[in-house]
Image (cartoon, rainbow, N blue to C red; front, side, top):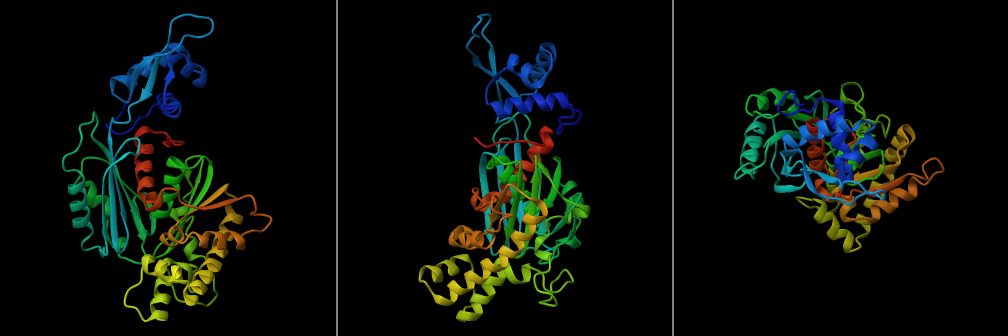
Length: 384
């Protein structure tokens, strides 16, 4: 059934496994009914899944209305294997070790940690070393690690990172030489969207917009990331907001993220107040004090973001737009401002909300990405 240690290849086995995951507890007869596979095939597949500890028998269920043998119920083994996830920003690293169902065992967060091509490998190695000390025993151990990168990524290659120089580093090859488990590298906004889809959202067509040093959008439909050529889909931060405007590291002028990214807001508040350092906590303090300059800044921020959000809604027609930003999380009224400005007839039925995964949405997406790869289940849903 498994052609390598890490990937389930056979389509019917993945289908049966997904039915077991989604139903929490299910009989072989019900699996046969849902999958349209005969009972002999289902019995053979479930035996293989049990032999490698991905599922287990839980209890004897109730017999049907017509009597007969009581069924033995099956469940997914949520403790069969381990996942690693790293979110690598230009000035921070966050990481998690989790079970295959996304239950986080241990997490690490380093703020104000400048990341560059010179120290990225050593920082990652130290982080992984700390996460994997005293690993819990599982049948399969670590089955993969996904890294979230704030920039353009395609097929594990970092193509362009505007705010740090990780595009000068072959991270995939470097880490592949150091670890025995598979390495995956993906754009941070894409992973944030996948995290929402897998762990939080009931919707099949979803966009997640991440706002940090830049602005990016992840687009998911039926569990599949829409990446475009060379991973450029969703680079909403590099759509033009102001023709002939501020220069952007991408080479254009007037890009949306040069006006609406979190770091731009912090920079403007720093200048307004003569401060040395501003982050979301400082912004919240001024907002709670009802400072007029801060309120005006938040209104402007919301106006700018609503332009980008409206544009991407018109292009992709999602059911829901989820926003991943420390500013909108800590000052939820900004979401209301954005909704007011995107309330046209064409976007009226689109839900706009903050992420329900908090500051961990990208990490959850990285966990989901590895789980999808390992289990070979694209439309994977792991929400309880």
